[in-house]
Image (cartoon, rainbow, N blue to C red; front, side, top):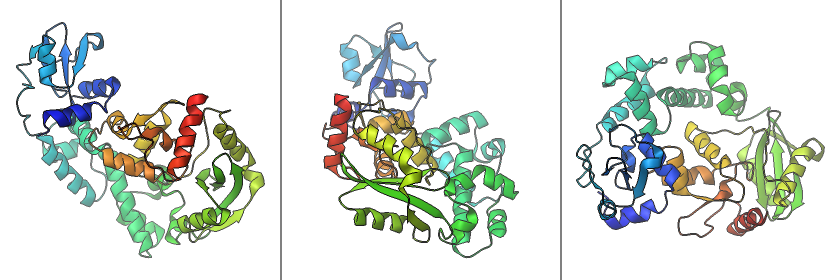
Length: 359
């Protein structure tokens, strides 16, 4: 169990909005990070307390139960925040649900899954999202997509790969899963062969800037010290695609990015064509919601997506962001106040944050 000092250190990384979200969700993973007190009742509780949700204007947050007692509040008799929290009964259930969804053919309904592992469909949905970060349907879709990719890499024909992975029809696959491939299944099967990527490299305030796109949208935004370095990185990302320089077709998007870098455009709205897992999309959407000129810690982002303990996974999602600036991963910083690392260099990250704050 987290000791008092580590609880204080962790809580410093959570803002009040993230704490309130944890209370609203009765989030067990936030237990030990803080307690909340309700002025109308005079009691303090764990974030996971099953009591009726209080009004936000009556809630005060404390880092430890001792702080709440000093503030004149008493312990809740229902959730007992002074004691050791009871084991989460949903952890084992959700683990079994994940194993089942990874191996079952087809797409079981929420009711079928709930009947198999125990609990109501409502509570299964809520706790699955709380612990895994996505819904059972999204998790099952990701599992089936992995099966399709594995079969395609093994040389299977597209139709056979789709049906063997559990898709009832090709239309269902193209509706739900094909966009996450970032290319058609047949193109993926050939390692990206036949895929056409256009790119341009221009000078920017942060050195050489590469912008690349497919017919669907921007697939890469990268910064480096030389054109050759950026071109090699793009070729490694798409080894079998046809890649060609073409500044004209990318001029509009490139100019928008340059204006952003100069502080003349606070928001970038670019059409994107990037591959991502459901979790990565969650993180990247949270990054896009960080206001221009502000920053968040990795723990803030984890709490914002309902996964307060997934700090390392959030950091990995930031590090694998293929479209710098369009998905503003530079706005995520360590809790110690430093700029932290950045895929395109810590110096560039500091310059970006300085420009945004001035603007």
